[in-house]
Figure 1 (spheres, one colour):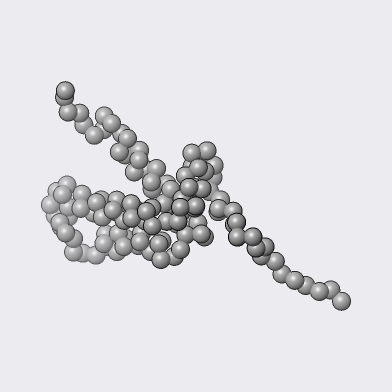
Figure 2 (tube, one colour; figure 1 turned 180 degrees about the horizontal axis):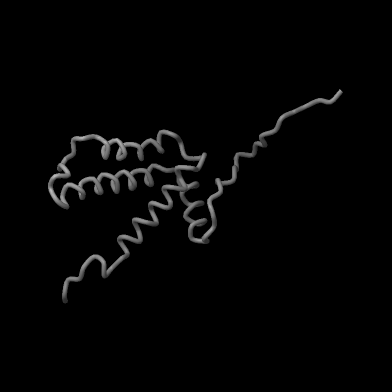
Length: 117
């Protein structure tokens, strides 16, 4: 059995892209708490910060640690997201639908009462 390149089996890349698309939808979803959304701000700060675990001066390894931090934050974000919004948006992505917020199921109608005299 010959070991092939990871490009021969693009399932890892495909999974990463699917997770990124799901995360992009969930960041815009009002049902996901703000504190959960802030998990994705951490890698942005890490990428901007001049100090790294492995400096970018080391070819390939310097960029791989940055990628690892981004992938870890993406995975943590998806784990922390509430189940209902995540399931809703997974189904929407599978059906090929454009983004729309998850319908509210709390039984309340946001309305304004006016009394005309």
